[in-house]
Image 1 (cartoon, rainbow, N blue to C red):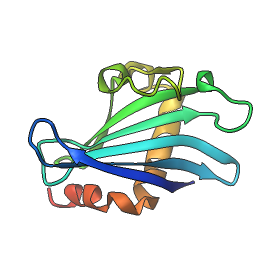
Image 2 (cartoon, rainbow, N blue to C red):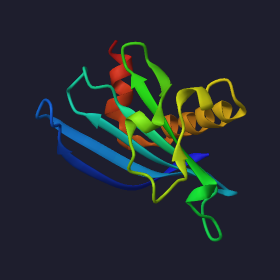
Image 3 (cartoon, one colour):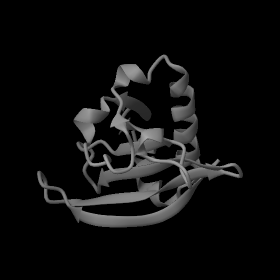
Image 4 (cartoon, helix red, strand yellow):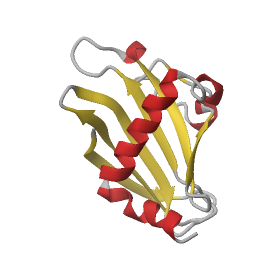
Length: 140
């Protein structure tokens, strides 16, 4: 699996005024797309942990938002670790793309967790636009 890059955007963080970035695309293999991802972080702001939103499930012709769920993940650079967090608390803006946001306890310890971390590995290893986020974990 690998990340396929779509778009990116920049803005200003409401609380600190620094530049925030968002990138997105899909994670797919020869069999098709398995997830759409969004990665959001604030540049030069170690106090703002980067967020990854995965929209996991079937994509393409004949599918609908009811075929997909949102999983929210936070990257802790100081520990160089990812944590699944409660999706509804993270973001409510994916209603047009997925049925619902999952809570942490609906992911951790379930068969879905293995799929989520496999998708996250593919994203982390093949998405060059997050190099500055990956570098945060190397400077701990």
